[in-house]
Image (cartoon, rainbow, N blue to C red):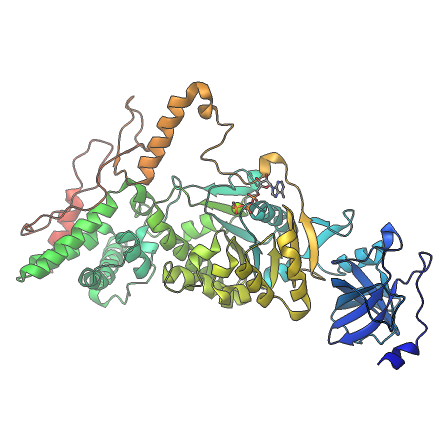
Length: 613
Ligand SMILES: Nc1ncnc2c1ncn2[C@@H]1O[C@H](COP(=O)(O)OP(=O)(O)OP(=O)(O)O)[C@@H](O)[C@H]1O
Ligand SMILES: [Mg+2]
């Protein structure tokens, strides 16, 4: 080998020469390049991360230095350093126009010259011709050059933002979404905001939905999700779940038959038992009907244990229905009848009216129901894409993704993982793209990560997270993972289809007002002033109690409209269990604000109808 190399005329390059070093060995897509050491000048310092251009015959190959060592090889005394260079792509000339392509069509030979690439070449690489690009920040190599991402590639096969806590993931997501919305006016974005931090990031472009304004009728939840909500995130009681599985389709049938009766008096009423609904069919039914059906069945039972089970189930439904924290599922759930279309239009911005983005703030929802809500929304997003044949492309962004799709199958709520996996695996075909954000990549389901073709890797010090990242990127880029522990705040190494090359960049700095920030405890909140400490603590306690299970909604002392922001008052959240069940269960009507008598009239009507049949 030494003799082969000796046939080339190696010489120590001078600062005046454009070439800096020479290829001393090639193995697969990695070249070993001899470099002068010490560096000849400040502008000719080639170190880890530096891009080199190698003249391989008529090809101009582009690579990145991943490792530099002293060179003690006596065969090459002129090169004090030896660099490992990952070959990433090449600059080609077609019809007199230069452009960059990924991958190499020729390999370098021993002795081929290497040099640090120039600013023009760097610009050329990031100016992907014909592609829609978004500017997300600046390149580490040269801050004057914008870091651009191919937005169509980014959105065609999902992306993930990974990094330890506090490195700038959420801010990066804000930068990305803002730029994506500019470049893709046809796209709708749905952002699951686990910590209520994005409320002020997007200005008037965002439709911010909080726990107080969210409306997700209970009948939209599929059976598993509804059971999860009913049992406060714990597994359901088997016998009770069986009763529900039997009665929910009947309640759906009953609702539909009543509607057809109302709409067309002459139309023969559909028998709810033959209406063809499953527990999961997303059609409305009313809680009154469900309760009446269960109650009805209980009334016919002789067996005391079975009656007890029905009674427990009714108490549980009653407890959930009257829990103020679950008002988003039950309040006005049937006003307007079948509101599925309106809900989809509102949440997924199908008629954007200048707001193509929904920020759903999850932090005010009861913790036990968040998984079921995320599962429902993931399902709705996918199914809408599926049944509309991808007519309205959507980006579904999920913060804290490891929480909803954990690598450990025993952790979390299986339907939530399934909903996200479904988008990850098939969403692309139906125009649904997933954007995942996590501070614990190693805890995220590996199948989901493997479906993300663009990765924004921010600082990660954990070995397991780095190993995961290394396995998720191509072999050629794996060496660049070594940069990841040393990145600063806002800094990213970008891998995958969104980038022409694995790229070290800094996300754009956001103006202070747009940096994602929790809205609950802000130091600049006037209530947090030292002078008003007591009122601040009072607010904290109120929120705390509200989140921990307040049940009653009280009237404003002034007697003002009860629809105003509800104030929670502590009350037991758990359903009551009488030692001996009464012969017939009388469901407790929801608490009313208008002083009217309980809503027994409708229930009686339904019961009478059922008894008649
Ligand atoms: N692009 C940016 N522009 C302005 N400030 C930034 C940016 N990125 C990060 N920061 C600063 O770093 C702080 C942490 O950023 P950010 O909240 O985005 O991190 P994170 O990775 O999402 O943290 P966590 O894991 O806790 O959610 C911000 O409050 C802000 O001060
Ligand atoms: Mg964050």
